[in-house]
Structure formats: structure tokens, C-alpha cells
Image (cartoon, rainbow, N blue to C red; front, top):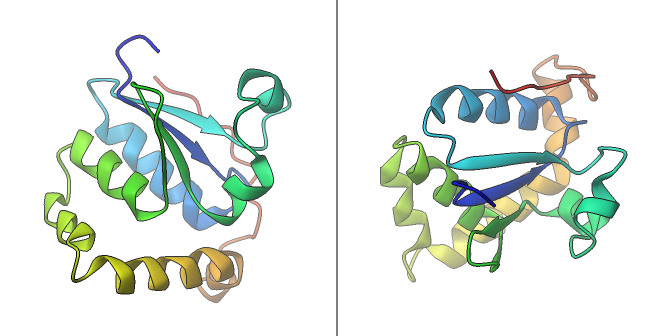
Length: 131
């Protein structure tokens, strides 16, 4: 996986997701994160171990040691890699983790509707390229 410490599998059809992905790409000057759109034509060929339907329901990531991580674990790891919002690690503390994960699951389920509340198109049609 070269120098990538994380492969982040994202929903390229979600405007809110894309907004976050673009921000992460801009912050990732070290190239620590490999960004993979789960809706790419060749996704299943390149990542047969990742079910795109499940990855659409809950954020998936793969560490450079091959371990899969999910949901807020992916978000917190990605933000730590770009040295942003490091305080969010509190969401992984044992006392807070169950509640934070529940809120994340609700958000993930309704993210397209939430996107419409903020007047973002449901599918942005973005083609994100790294500089």
C-alpha cells in the first residue's frame, strides 16, 4: 500500500461525504490516506474483500497492516493522520464509544436526507482527483 497508513472507502454519491473527503484530501499533504470511492467501476475487482453495500451503510477503512476498521474508528484515524481534530479521540473512550457509535449509525443511515436539508444534491457527481 506504499506509504498509505489507511485506505478510506467513501461514498462518492453523498454530498456531505464528498465535502469531508475533499477536506481530508487537502489536509493529507503526507499522502497517508488512500481514498477509494466504493462506486468506482473497478472497485469490486480491486477490493473484493469490501462489500460496497456494507461500506455504503457504514464507513470502512483498511489499515496498512490489513486490519479493517469501521465507522467512527475510520473517521478518528483519518483525522489523526492529518493532525486535525485530534480531540475527537475522546469518541473512542470506552465510556463514550457506545453512544458516539449509535449517533454515527443514525447519521450514516440518514446522511442523504441530511444532505438535502442543507440544500446539497444527493449525488454530487464529483470526480475527486489528488493533486
